[in-house]
Image (tube, rainbow, N blue to C red; front, side):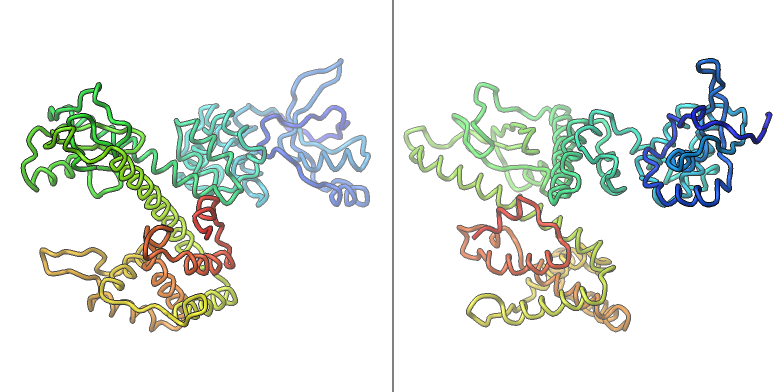
Length: 470
């Protein structure tokens, strides 16, 4: 391999099209320095052929220096010329750029993909760049995001690493990736991501349910009796049980549990793909004339559907809040932690509005608190009821002692107090809290709680904002 250092006209130097770094950034300060002191370190270039009878060189290392030299008005720049293979070029550029803090995750990902295209193995990439194999594989997943998805967001190149990882999670589903990319940078990104995850889980659950039902010869509701929706009764049948992805266990277990409850002669099922549900029906015991008025049945069906949407909102918003608490509270600065703690303490003691009514907890209330706490902190020893073994509540000695142990650590006391206050709030929120038609609806208290979260940086999604309207 021949190496030489020569001065080369800037007009004979061209940027490398495979440089991981898409944008050299602001080079004005560097240009001023070059004007005053010249270029202290030569560029690394490789021959790239002739143009108009003049030899051309492709920059491998030194793109910022070349841009600054042009801005400074230099005609010649010092270069180290090396004959390099395409593979070595990309390796050198990637190694050089991964040492810089301003290389975006997407640029790094595409750099690894370029090496993969040239036959470089993941292990070798990791060794050459000083990265872990796990990190390299993660970046390659990001690089696999299709061009059509990248174009769905004008600022795609500037997305955060976590956003890119979330989009890459839906590999193979370009529609989902594009929908998520379009929400990047907005308050609805996490909401959309969680919604897409639930839809994916529903599809997988339904696929497994269909395979199990077919392999076990479960009778299906005839297609000509298809109901309007999963809440309606088909002609000649009565809806008995909804088995769904959002209930514990796979379809096979839910079906067996239902069968164990008693005999269901003539039971048939229908699979509702979009809802992630299987509904079981049995032959109607009443004649059409004996059934309740159709309008009343339609009204009940609409109410079931409305209530189902409220439960979905409650579940989806709880997931977002708990995820935010889990990742944010442990790293809150002292002022923000104290502010949240003070505001939540007043909310617990005084309540909201023109009354002075705080919250009190019975054993069931503490069970909900333990569940909530364990969803965003290290789980407590007992997180599930077990009636068969006498565990009817989570307000048990093991949990109380563990909470006190954590609170006894001086450096953790402030965080643990805030986590407990948050758990008390979360444990008090359920579908009724959001439901304007429910007796236990508490939109005032919910809005007060959201104000505290938002003051600490929680991004309220559009769906939550709409649900909070009073």
